[in-house]
Length: 525
View 1 (tube, one colour):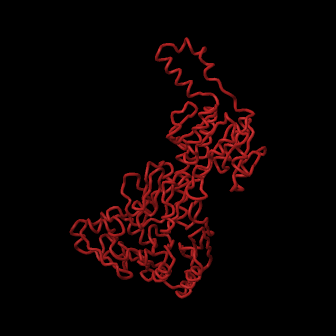
View 2 (cartoon, one colour):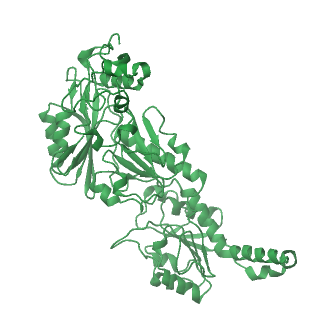
View 3 (cartoon, rainbow, N blue to C red):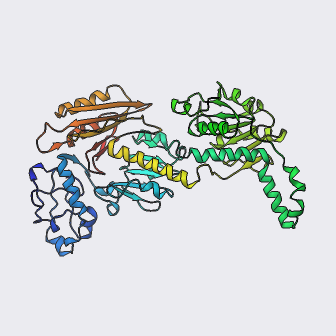
């Protein structure tokens, strides 16, 4: 259109490409066509081998009825890119090998959902920058994945995927180690469901104290016999119990759920609290009741407890938490102790728990299946209800969406289970943000910074953090010393193909572009 300066054109080697001007002479209505529309109107896409490629849409498209039907999003998208004066590469080789042309939405991040995700949470993305694909809708070009209980496989994760977020705290259903190898951060939502789980823990404490479930079933049987009114007072002695006030609650694990449980059990129920958590954070410590007694082992916490709440993650392998509540721990407890397991079923050795229930008046209340204890008279086994409230689902989905947005739009990492927390201050308008994921090996950071120096690109601010086998870098690159186009294509390829680098991203205001991966020596961009 009028006033557009072709000299400050940014070009994008992509399935939708920039033109030398917007006069509309060689374009349908002065607009660009996406791959889907190109296919629809019979326009052949050019090979992706150069820079500033021009998609020449001539009489073929017009004759096939494109005209004003082309989505104006393409024009707006190109204008936004032009204003940034940034040149990147996107879509080298055969686009079909990267995803699905028919579901490709230019200028937007595609979010693929598994399971039913709260619409309130998904609404945090908005429509301007995000194309959200609910469960059951194809997301072959997904830039991020949101899920709840779906057991994710590597085949579910396209090469375009930058991040995965679980709407919940546990990530047992995600192959985290493999995602780390692929350079993909996995996020969770710690604390989002804490209140819902805490309320169920307290409910379980009462169920384990008063034989409420047995009483309900008894009254149903009497009702069927027409004897409920006659026996309602006589039979209450069958279901006697005890009060929780003044009793001791041992809380194993003092994270969001454990700390909240300890606080409310103390303040609202008048219980004495004993806690154990070798990794207690300052944030959680500040939430604990002043009267709590902290001990240095699980056995010490459980020894004199009337109720024992398990609030620790399930970790497989040596040094993990599989079967951590074993015979030695259980045998050291009171004979009438009530175990509350709303964390993970695998934390408890079923054989030891069954033996405990057989020999005394102890209880086991859980929302995980147990093959040995499911029908025991002293066990209450519920469906997995911990986070199954509308409020918890909304909170978890909202937190997951916000986390993904911060990562995609700013490169910020928070609440990741496999990447280090990393954040730079907001970037200056004259900088472009560049992120690099690499194996945590000596010398790689130097290789990255030297590549920028060779391209005459100045680093304004940067941060480098590592966690185990992976390192994450965020760098802001100055663009003021460059006239017209700032070319990132070559430096991105050079950095991405360094040995040990897994992926890189250029964050410059164009959703869905600027991502490159090193796939075993092959450059994916």
